[in-house]
Amino acid sequence: MALMVICLLAVGFLMPFASTDSDAAVDTSDFKIVVSGTEAPDKDVTSVIENGKTKTWDVYVINMSDKFLDVTFSKSSSNSELTITEAPAGKMLVPRNQMNESYYLEGKFTIKADNLSESSHGSLVTLSVTVIDVNDKSSSVNVDVRFLIDIDSVYDNSDMYNKFLGFIENKTPPPFDKAWFPALITVIFWMVIAKFLSWIIAPRFARVLDKQTTSDDQKKFEKILSRLIVSLVMLITINEAMDILGLSASIKNDVMSLSSIICIAITIVIAWEIYKQVIDGVLLRFEESEDDTSIDRTLLPLFLMLGKLGFWAIGIASILGALGIDLQGILISAGVVSLGITMGAQNVLGQFFSGMVILFTRPFKKGDFLKINDKVYVVKKVKVMFTEFYSWDRDQIITMPNNAVTASTIVNLTKEDEAYRLYIYFEVAYQTDIKKAEKVMLDVANKSPLVLHDESHAPPNVRLTSFAGSGIELRLGVTTMNFGSSITDASALRIAVYEAFLENDIEVPYDRLEVTMLNDCFSGQRRPGDTVAD
Image (cartoon, rainbow, N blue to C red; front, side, top):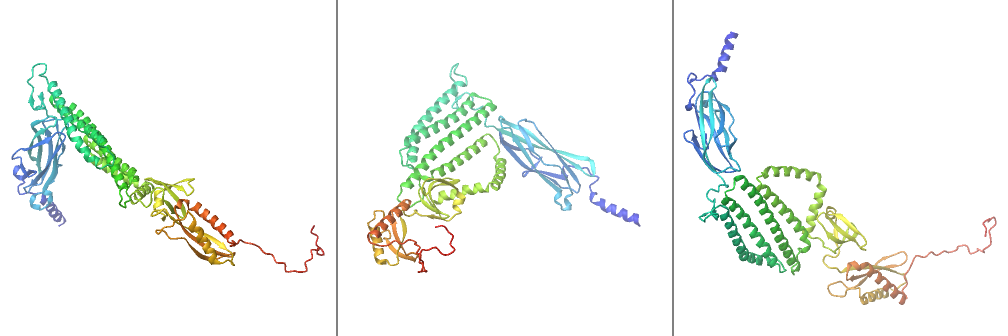
């Protein structure tokens, strides 16, 4: 009984591998090959690839039978300038009737043309598909999928060789019938055209750019644009001259890469010069505008720094792209590095972004008096990473990180008006006529040239603030012209009020110690037992 059970289990296990067609050899009807929607190998797959470019097809092999099929691939190319960079991987396919996704495989087939490849037609690339019956290793089928590839090369100069401007046949007599002569004439022709274009176009664009500035920079703009036009045309002309000369693809590739780098560098430098002039002019217009705006030329260093970073990034990316370097991997690596820098330099980045916030929001400007943490500072210069302050006496320069500045509560004492409300405190004796003291203090304030007397500022006033130990405290409130001189102004007003008090017999009290002798019998004689020397 145990033996019978084992036999039944073995038969059940081997049943899936059995096939009703097991005795029949595998053939092309047992599977189907599809290449990007075109059934193969019924017809060749044709395509055109530019040099340095790739072309990819989706390849499918589908099991149409009840057999277990093992599929493998091999590849070959008749042209060494065409390389196969990706091919499908082999796989065992189950019978289609098992309703399992493993009854088919899919993969990518990619062909790349060499960067320096010349134009060619009908190059054969073969993808060989070998299908073997798993149950009968001797039964197999090999199918070749043919790809006929045309290479379209940018270095193809066969239609331009020894032709004026690349299309006029050179029929001049010797020695001018050689390729050097039409190449030279072509260069001269395009240089004349470049000078003509710079003479026509540059002044018009320069006038447009000059409108963005407040100074007469039209001649400078015109010179910059003329150089740009001539340089770009010259680089294009060199490439055309190489086609006329029939130079090899390797030489043309090196020259084109170098000319692309030079072209990018020239464009970036000239664009940077234009950017500086335009930004300076725009900020100057805002500064001279009567509108209430926080934009002025103090923002110029910030915009120049941002512009410099932007132009550097664009220039480097363009040059790397011209050299054929894949920027995707660089960007991913830069993202990882940036993340590490961000985590390790949070304080530095905090200073940077705080500086950006200060420069854009403009809560204060150069020369403003700020009260930060109960200390008064004078703004000297706002930079991206830190802000420089003068002490109130301007005898010290204090450098404060911008993140510390933005984290503090700032009182701008002179943002709206440089005038400052100054309060001076005095004490008068308790027996003083308060009304008289107030009148004397107001007379001094009203006659002082240090005090502002206009309708836009509060007039001088006197308040009784407290009853002190030695006298009555009065406060004189006045508006002075400048907060920066408030210390000297306060000193001058105190002197004037004190002198006025003296002239009007108003007593300014001070702390005094009165000693009262309670023993009226004191005679000045030594007491009995007193041994202290006289």
